[in-house]
Amino acid sequence: MDALIAGFERWIRDSSGWAPVAVFAITCLESLPGISLLVPATALLLAVGALLGTGALEPGPIVVAAVTGAIAGDAVGFWVARAVGPRVVRRWLPRRQRRAYARARLLFRRWGWAAVFFGRFLGPVRAFVPVLAGVARMQERRFQTANIASALVWAPLMLLPGYTATRGMEEMAASDNPLLFGGVLLLLAAAAWPLWRRFL
Image (cartoon, helix red, strand yellow):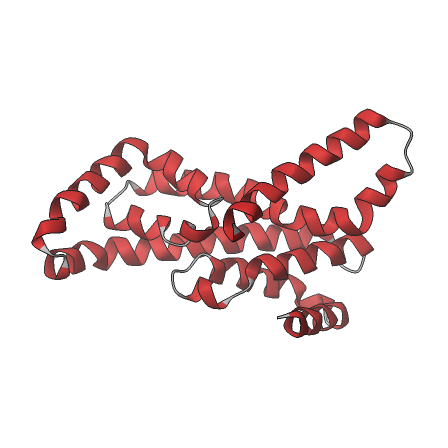
């Protein structure tokens, strides 16, 4: 894993023009069930954040790519599940689990927006929430607004720890303003929370 991350960092540094494309692919694949297990997206985004902190990459295109990739990945999972999910459930779901499926549909009809929004921050289930929303036939407008809103928050938070580790903490340590330093620590805690939930 360390060799993969180091090689990725070298490639991004040497091919910075491709960095937004790579970040888009990482965040998109991270949102797809099954495939997300094969992509070490958290570690790769931390590495990208560190490169942002060194000034090797321009932050604007990277953040836009991370946000749009996350939106696209969740949207694809939702659309596929919405198209084929109910048919698969009717054909393959055991009869004894149909009541649980009905409860899940009711849950998404009532709390679907919050489930989609907050589900993105829960690493182990992040890729499955859009699929469940699609199978439950959640209204697309509600899904997409939660999808976009959560991606706008999640993507910068995933890049922030790496950025801060290489740049922010040094600047804050040299500052005489304790409130500014405390604010950075709070941001770090907020960014670390989804990572902690993912690995512990």
